[in-house]
Length: 85
Image (cartoon, rainbow, N blue to C red; front, side):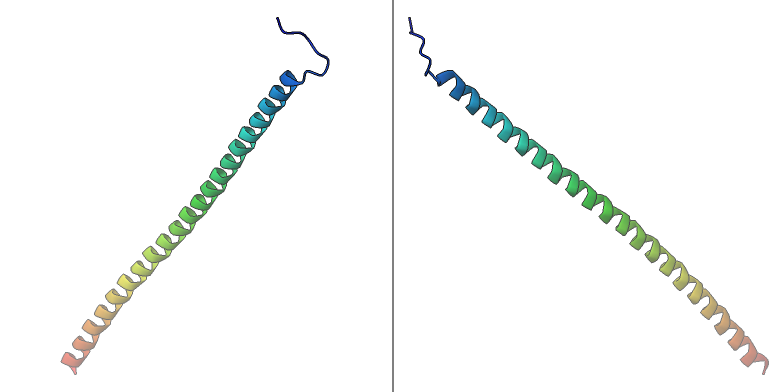
């Protein structure tokens, strides 16, 4: 049987090491969650910017189609005017 000593710190040292491990694991978990949240925010922001760029591209394509249609109509009108003259 082990004799009890007042200066026997074995149990308290093991408990402190267990607390240190828990605190370290908790800090690592919170840090990982923080990085994950920052990455998700960056992805969301990039997706929003991509939607804006897609909308601008769609508008530019519509404007180009309208300009081509207008140019074709003006070309037809010019050809008709030249035929009449």
